[in-house]
Length: 495
Ligand SMILES: *Cc1c(COP(=O)(O)O)cnc(C)c1O
Image (cartoon, rainbow, N blue to C red; front, side, top):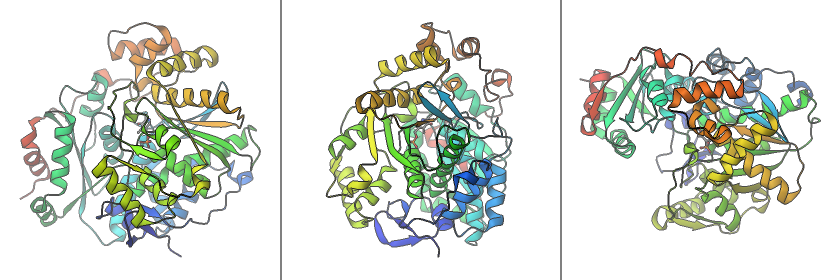
């Protein structure tokens, strides 16, 4: 039986896994979502000795069931290799009362690497399976982080090109250097004289420009998207929850079969949704704890059943969670209303037209799996300090949001279930705010903060940061917003 991925907004739009990956978003605006669960045998007495790659094979072959074994081996072996600074790939570390699942050992020291290092291989393999031999062109506008993680994933992957636009002067020095020193013959980085929205708007316009699409096709190429709604990003994220549980069994923290809680610092709801799917295929989970920063639209949603995006957007020290429309929540909504596409579409239409929706009668069993909370900016800074003082461990601000929410949850509920926290970034990614929070000092710039963090934490700075100051800059193009398309056409050599 082949698993069916159905659009959350049209019950007649059904595809296989590889078709879902190649298409990205459904043309009706919905998200491709599995309507049944694959059969997976999770035997943790065995899995506790499995490598990351072996767990990945088990989980991916279940969800991506139209891929052959050879195809999955190719994708997995090229994704989870020396790009990661530990052969464990995603270690579990005890931190005070909880366990951190460190998802930041890849090229850009944040959790997006976990999925973006395999997506390019899943995409090109999907294209081949569908008889498409066009070159896959990824266009991305970035406010700093996602573009770099996507580039690191796509760099030198045969059959792909990636072009990233970022707002000139609006990213941190480290972020800018991470992008402008990017290697790979198929990577192209362009600064624009405009803000992130300008870049984003024009990228979307190019995606939908029929004439440009036709020109690409005539030149043997087509656009594709690497955004977090792609099934090729969601499914690889299920892997590390299964792998983390196996590690907890192996180290004797839990017995095979014992339930754990999983706390996830949440923005677009992709990472926590993957934890939900891990639970659905048999991972023993008590609660999924959804942690937000001051943009607490999800905390309110779980408390009231109403999703209301009509509120002030706050800029916080955990920027990857500064989101008011959590795109991947649509998949949970779809399941909550009994996999009903018409009902989901109605709610999503209400969100775009009225800025809100309220849940109708839903599957209470699914809803009860979730707990939710948020951490203020002050609470997040306090948490970094407290974790450092108590456990001699430095958390980044995103992880600290989750850690603070979990601390409050534990006090409120008395729930002592062993708890895993998805640790989504290295503190070296946000060195200034981390140093400020734990020492009270104000480093002069990012590099001074990195040096200070190294002294204070005793953890060596990762390869991704080391040498950045002196790495050769390879990308220096700056253009006006209106010149973006000309830049794309010139770079791709379109005629
Ligand atoms: C993207 C990101 C998140 C949020 O993950 P979602 O899947 O969007 O919920 C949290 N922390 C960091 C560091 C991230 O980069």
